[in-house]
Image 1 (cartoon, helix red, strand yellow):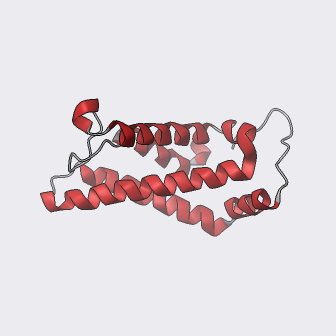
Image 2 (cartoon, rainbow, N blue to C red; image 1 turned 90 degrees about the horizontal axis):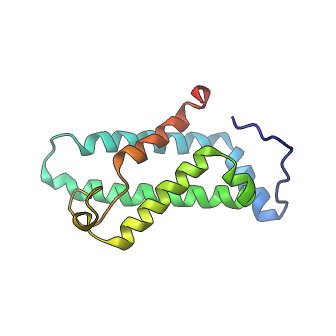
Length: 143
């Protein structure tokens, strides 16, 4: 856990309090951990020798997990506010992943960018090594 140097002042508006209650919910955290683990397994499978018919599936799951990451990050930002959000290193990692994903979606093909190509070559994706770093959230004791 990240221990702040001084006591935090949490935003008190009702939507922010509801978002914090959601983030503290045990089942919400379990679902997020399962999704992170599932995403990691799919990342490992992307590099296995599979039939080319799987490329559409991997492209769809890449977009799905990006949308879920974006939603989770927006809820966390809403709950804690900018200064509290940016004080947590994992949130900074999430912001880097989102920024590189958005840049990839706007830049276009992986051939133009040179790395991070999706299985169909349709668009650019976050490099797998960055996305796999989210797995460390499953083991907060190590940090």
